[in-house]
Image (cartoon, rainbow, N blue to C red; front, side, top):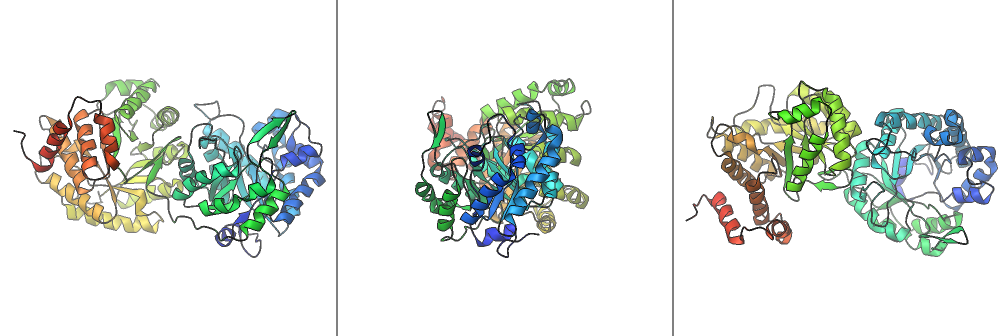
Length: 600
């Protein structure tokens, strides 16, 4: 493994702020590369031109340079009738950069977008894109690169495909960098924090942002990423914002003005800094001189308890979270028929109804004998990821379905669920670890469901030893206290609440399937609502429930405010400000549930 200044790539990031290179394409254009030709082929035909600018960057202080292979995938090269030359082109470009770098700088094998979108936004299948990137990565690795860098990406799904391709092709460090607009979103709507968590979950060793904006606009985005990232952060800004003058693109920052943001970016959490459009070796020297004055900021040991969708992130624990339970064919003939006929708009309708009613996360279960479950789950995830925009909970008894779902899901998902049975943990913990997912832990061991709280706690303790040995911390776990039917066991609710309270006292997040407890009883909504509020009082983190149940949702908002999970009563006021229910009525209902007093 290559070393620079006596350190491997990842070791270097712990000791120093790594200075990257700057723009290369503009230099190539200034030296004869005309619009409409293949940039990669031009570089191969003019190796001295590329070698000079890369050498200049290293002399300026770059400790990592990128191969000139940004558009070197088969899809992009096909636009120049060079789709069959992927291996030749990428290997040659990698060898050229490796020769220039020697032991003075690391070489990143550069990948970028195929130029097309994955389904359902486009026509490409996820695995098709993985294979496209694998071909390019194999060629870059054979040419001698030291890490893989995926840059200037606009779509989180395609970026994940590239990361997975890299991880399945080589054992080199993988860097993933997306581009964000002035509103802090990618073209497909992903925010900085959600992007960071999603890319780390996919396997990226470094995450970050490049292009689109100048360094000033990137400071807050770096802070957002740093707050949630268990990986170093990369930043490669443009030289300010572009302006077209007399048909030529110019950038508004001078070299000194650009370098002034080096310290703020490092303080915000950037561990790797370079330049993108409009920068040159002079910019990089100024950055390197400033970066040498600073120690790198450490990154988190683990990501927070949080889930992400293609556009949003949902933190677990800060506020109570509602997991919508409706997308489950059990007892729903219309949904069964829709899944059997391949009509996923029924799934989408259920999803949007639950979101409108207040669900933060959607449980997705498509298991029914009438359908091919792996195919149905894939189709459901593709549609919901693009349209529903909230994190998903993958619900299946089939480990293969869970594995396939996590592979294509463009976010950090929740898995429902893992029991504490040894075989179940052995089968699914590697899957959870590989995709850095969160999961629901059921304290159901090889001897069945413990009837007492103490029995369930012992199952949790034993399972957590194995979970932590697998490198998974408690921040990735939601413990299910197990809601049993109270009509058959009057002590069932109190035993479950003891488990919830113990978990809260010992740093575990918790979840309950609230409606399970009221089976066989009349007017179940009252039992369900009371159970929910009592559990929230015991420290419950989330519930799998029907967000269309107005009583439960109203009471949840009231209880959340009363137990100090609703800052300034913002959520409560938003829900009830236009409601006919008065504040006094709402408080009366909550008091009745919490204290047992009857309204008089």
